[in-house]
Length: 85
Image (cartoon, rainbow, N blue to C red; front, side):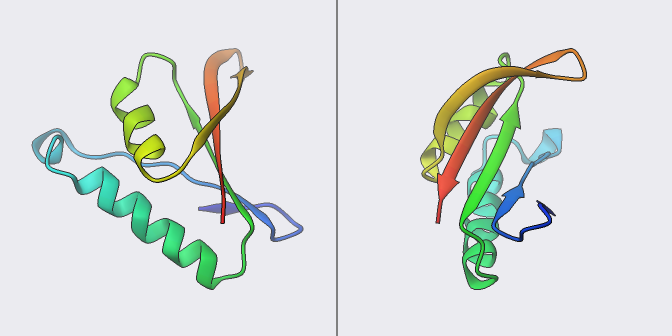
């Protein structure tokens, strides 16, 4: 997690190893991060996901994240998702 200076918004990402994919590890990890963020008093979590990464989009959506916008990060296209805690 990377927290913004105001402490209210945090950027979160996930990388599940190839042998662990498809077993629910990512979904559980994001759920735990959401619980941690709530206990820390954060209000929002953001995730920037490459458009081709459908698996990550499914994991974040399953954990209550909603699509916000398409944008670029250092010239790389990304879809931004956000969850309000």
